[in-house]
Length: 388
Ligand SMILES: *Cc1c(COP(=O)(O)O)cnc(C)c1O
Image 1 (spheres, rainbow, N blue to C red):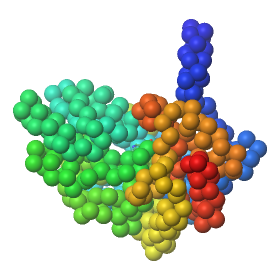
Image 2: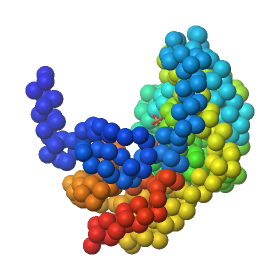
Image 3: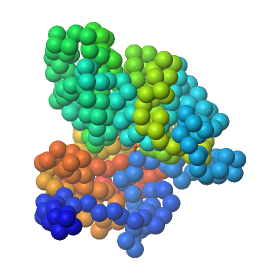
Image 4: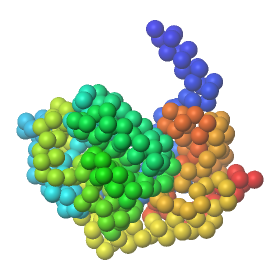
């Protein structure tokens, strides 16, 4: 048996697809200590530099003192504590929704929610580049799945038409991200909302990489475009710009009550520690402060510095988020490029199959409000070197 795993791992190695864990020896921040080197980190999703902030640590520590470490049971048994409800109130207000429910992770959110909202008789239509958690949740639900090519609205419409003709009684759910995790581009949300309304479908929008980055106080793309009220199911994570851990859904009171009853990753999993809920609540509070908005503006200032220094051709023409893909194609090319950045003192990971499609391997550079202008300048020099 173990021989077989070894052979399969060897095969991955041969294809430049083997992955290994890296152990970092530093606090979250733009500088990381790894393999005896000090590197500037361009790989984290901590877009606002919150994960290592003192006020978040304090919020977590205080909650540990007050409520203990473990939450002892699921939310529906005896795991619900004041910080969970406070977090959910703040999330609902922040996202302009009636109610919210939080989960242990974004992954658990997608799995539990899609499985609770759709069954065998229903149809789920996904963007081709939707996150693995959304795909897994859709599969788990047993619904009929349809995938449209990334951001292609004619294809989405064709699937909606098909669903309405062939499954007139079905619930039809459109699932997409607002900012795509590996490409950094945006969904044409106004068009999607028009279409799903026209065909009487529901929309689940995953704002994992938009919250904290776009919209007033970082409320996300739906808010930026004035479409919040038309997004039926607003999903996000607490683990990216918010700097903590966990996931959430915001929506109508009835939707949230349904998920509390039927989302299996919520019902059958121990409540996240109160400390995480308290820290996430503090992060949402911060986002809505003047200091939070200034932090978000600093991120966009940094993106402007990066955009001005990018070599043409390798990266998108216009940066639409804090994620900058450097498209390279072959797995090995991406690994070589990542090594080159490492040698120059930067941590920029290669993103390969199965995270992205075969032949679309890339570096994924992410920016933070905490990067210094000279760090951004320095990384662009290595990008120019790569472009040559
Ligand atoms: C990271 C991510 C998730 C999963 O969230 P976790 O909190 O890391 O489990 C879900 N959707 C998207 C688009 C993501 O990028």
